[in-house]
Amino acid sequence: MNLPDTLDPLASQQFNSLVADTPLAGLQEFASTDFLRSLRHGKLNEWLQLLESTPRLQASIVDLQSQVRIGKSCDATAEERAQLLKNLQALIPWRKGPFNLFDIDIDTEWCSDMKWQRLQAHISPLAGRTVLDVGCGSGYHCLRMLGEQARLVIGIEPHLPYVMQFAMVKRFVPATPVFVLPITMERMPPALGAFDTVFSMGVLYHRRSPLDHLLELKSMLRKGGELILETLVVDGPDGYALLPEERYCRMSNVWFLSSCATTESWLRRCGFSDIRLVDLSTTSVEEQRATAWMPFQSLQDGLDPDDSSLTIEGLPAPRRAVFIARLA
Image 1 (tube, rainbow, N blue to C red):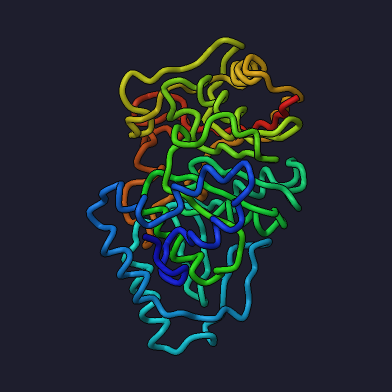
Image 2: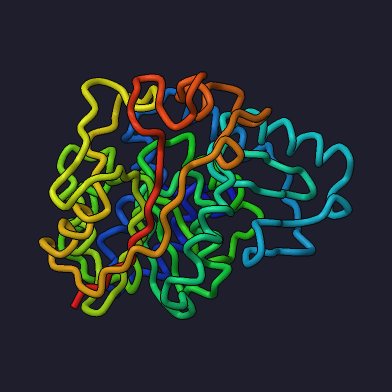
């Protein structure tokens, strides 16, 4: 059973109508409240009630190109903005953003706009393209992709609190062709070959088998399609990758941190061509930090207090590279 789109966190009816009779039709089973309930998350009913109690506001401004700004304070009464603020705060922690909703600033842990600025000029124009964002979190970058006039943007994110954050934002731009499905890459129909552009940002180093992840990404792309891969890297020659013994920057789910040369070799081995390293930057505490909207440990807590070039485990501090590659 699906809820009306005004309450449905996955906008099932809209999604299904857009992908029907296309190679993406196999994703319809994941865009339903029944599928959400099958995941058996204990807070789902609470989240659905939260969405229902959120004021249905009409935004007089929508800017997804220079930022993610939806609505102005004058679009709502004081009581409506107070209820919206309360509901947004109920979804803390907010990690990827920032968002501005009716002049409520959601100051997220990550200044994800900084990452977008680093890669935006290097990617093929997204206008008219069908885009997949793997591990999209709250969908911030999905909305920026739509701001570049993408035809359809689909994010996948298995962490349900982030899916609900996106559902809250999408509530105020209901007609936009951007969706976040609560699934992992492993649930995607195999060998879709349906996307013009695929993004994988901040995912590769969380995978026990990075080559399998690259092959999965490849299988999503049409011939000539473009992959944007952003991942943690370390210094070293071709063939070198660091495997942390236990944790990395306090994170327990980090596996391989490869050198740039190794990452390029992996991409070539998996069948990608025209590989370019377009950005290499050290992650700063200005870009990732604790805020009132994410009041827990962040990057600063994972660095050596006496030497910010090292993590608290004595490993190289986070550096992130952006690669762009094409499927020949």
